[in-house]
Amino acid sequence: MRIALFATCIVDAMYPKVALATVRILERLGHEVVFPQGQGCCSQMHINSGYFEDAVPVIRNHVRAFTSTDYDVAVAPSGSCVASLGHQQPLVARQCGDAALAEDAAMVAENTYELSELLVDVLGVTDSAAQLGSWFPHPVTYHPSCHGMRLLGLGDRQKDLVRSVEEIEFHELPDAEECCGFGGTFSFKNPDVSGAMADAKLRNIVDSGASLCTGGDASCLMHLGGAASKRKLDVQTVHFAEILASTRANPLIVDGPVELSIPQPGRRSAAPVGATR
Image (tube, rainbow, N blue to C red; front, top):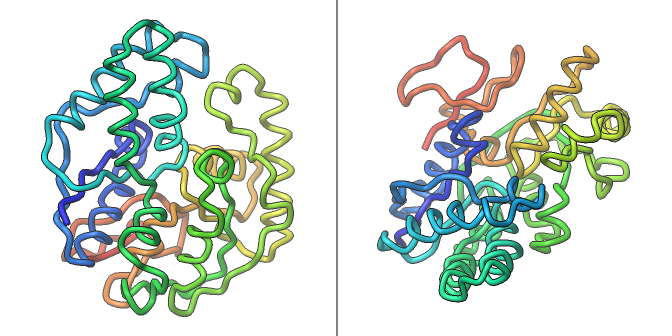
């Protein structure tokens, strides 16, 4: 299968190796991954802040990038961005009077999957250890992001994939369905409330008994990781794609601060993280 990668702007700008982990997982399954040129933001930030007119050219750019490349399906390692494609882009284009763009946006969105959704529903991956060779012998808990849970209806797809990793020590997260407090621009506009919500989530992570928290949205993990660092808590965050990409031959290293990154193939760096095909 030919799969187009939608990297998303936060992964591209802040955690590009999450995109690399996604590519390695899919290539490990024997699929070809392509990167549509010209892609950028999904427009979620603009829309959430009410800038519909400013969002239209961003939507148009995304649609152009993903209609000018030949592929079977598209994938993104972000529930919130995939949710924005289907929930927001067609609505905003239509409200701004561009019916053709709304139709094209809906078509692109219909063919774009969040990573766990693609793995489970399309590619039939249900056992990460057996089918991906995933190995990660560490205590981990899982935070489901709001968009993936409430808009995409991902259910336990991400969690089940993580739980099936070889030798992982999985801890259930108390009150897992509570928001972490990021909410995109919400965290900037309401920092006190956002910080209090992060505190509550961090207390639950500590209470779970795990020192690592994983999830499917780099934005939520960035928010929680930053809050934990500021509060000097022994809590680190890592995207579930990197846990799935971790193998015995080239494991995800957690001795020291975990960063969402992977060294180049064939290199074992002193940097904290590694994965392989």
